[in-house]
Image (cartoon, rainbow, N blue to C red):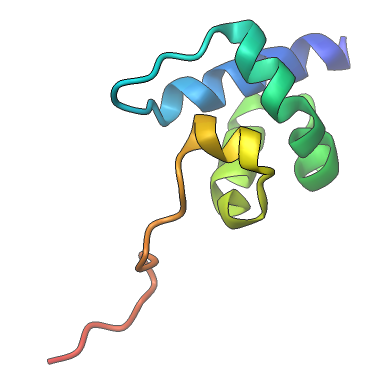
Length: 84
């Protein structure tokens, strides 16, 4: 049951952040990101919405392979201070 939730969560997490120009299959997504889900977000399994949120928050800590699916963290975080 937890593995099904993980697979669904990883799949939906990848859909939430598509990369232009490169489509990853669901098998690619699982192969590249399952380890990161367990390493960084295991406490969120099987809740797919929480897995997605956790993976987005941990984007800078993702393995190179998973980061290629999710995309690189933005240069400036949403919480950055605006200079006036």
